[in-house]
Length: 102
Length: 143
Length: 101
Image 1 (cartoon, chains in turn purple, brown, blue):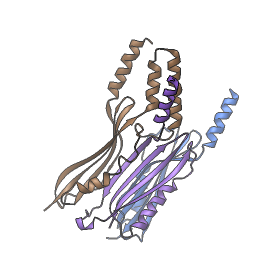
Image 2 (cartoon, chains in turn blue, cyan, yellow):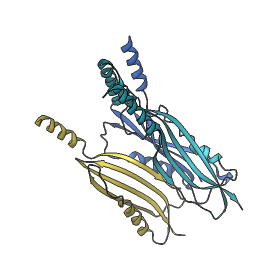
Image 3 (cartoon, helix red, strand yellow):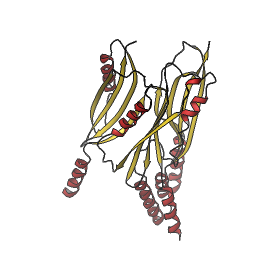
Image 4 (cartoon, helix red, strand yellow):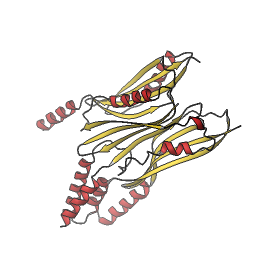
């Protein structure tokens, strides 16, 4: 019974942990005007990683290209977050970009 | 090592560990030409908990050999179930920093800001920590 | 002993070239994006032991030299580390736009 309880706890504690590595917010030189605040666009790209066997970080470039496509007139504010969702002998790296297009 | 000595050592580690850790910092452009600046800070945080480390500590402090072995097994299972790069202790909510941008937007009545500094830091107490994203900046008070 | 060494060698070799992302950063994207400039800088080390991070400055110099009279905007920086057997390669990739003022 005690072992079952411990095992249950282990299963619960091993579920879905994450680690936010960095979150950067940047504003342009020409600070935005109230009228300029448009919708916040959100882009997320990820890469599944099993035991570290990945050979590129192209998903980050894809996220950036997506941002360029969605903001043809540039951005006035930008937030980049890099995080990892942990798993069983594997993990998922994620890039989340939030931006306000001009 | 006697249990008492272990406890003292463990307690010292916890006390020494209760300190701030800087993981990442990014400083943006600062424009002082448009008016006086008023500082603001946005902080979001989440409880970080390293379950594997806690089980390891427990295994070290356990009185009986069988409990110690069980806890070591628990630590191992937790470690392989939470594989991947870590910055600070793991958290159970990966969206805690999602609202940072919208909070920053709301920070300045003038809607103009400069000098944003993004800080990723943590305050650790053993296997428990406060995982923090802090954005500091200045509102521009237009002349 | 020989078996362990062999196993370890195979494991190390199989992980050769695996890459890990360290950080990503970007500044405001400009509207004018005709002149894209890119640069990269790398630094090798043994067992992860480094004595200098000066390779990052090479990337900055690389950007400046491609845009001597213009304004460098929309700087996108990616810092990654690739692992080889006992060796690591740290790399910084930068892309930006050079706009004449």
